[in-house]
Length: 164
Image (cartoon, rainbow, N blue to C red; front, side, top):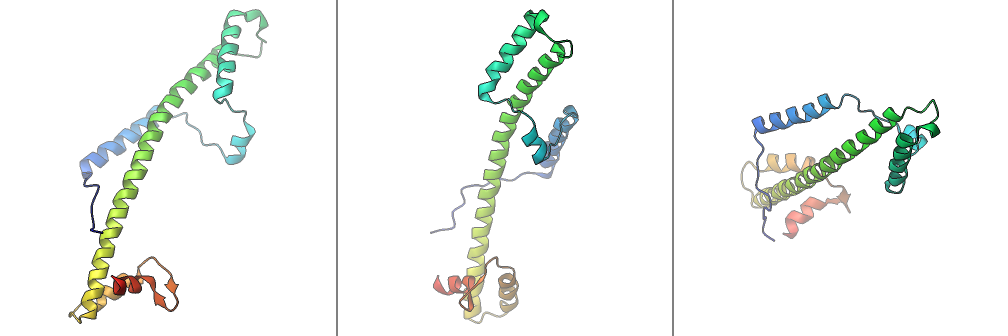
């Protein structure tokens, strides 16, 4: 299989800086974000897809049947929380799709870089077998950082070099 590159892209330092600034803008505009511990996340009741209709209906009734609202329930805060949920969920969907694209693209670029490194490593191994001067130190340096375990006394990458 040839060493095909599916992805060919670059991210300039200025674009990277601009994107980091955009992320900082999100942080600046959302200073109220919280980080819950796993225990806290389990402790709070959750508003999911099924309970969303219930929450919206309860707010509507609370706004229009004030006589039923207990004195300790702040309907304005209730409505404010619900509006915030709607806004944050919309942002989260967009950011989650972006994060998925970032992760997938980074994985693909990493895969392509790793395949290129393997091609080069195999080439160095072949050159070493042919006693090309100066390749032993390159081969040993790459071999020492090769991310694999020994297999029956031989390193897997040495078998790969010999086998291909």
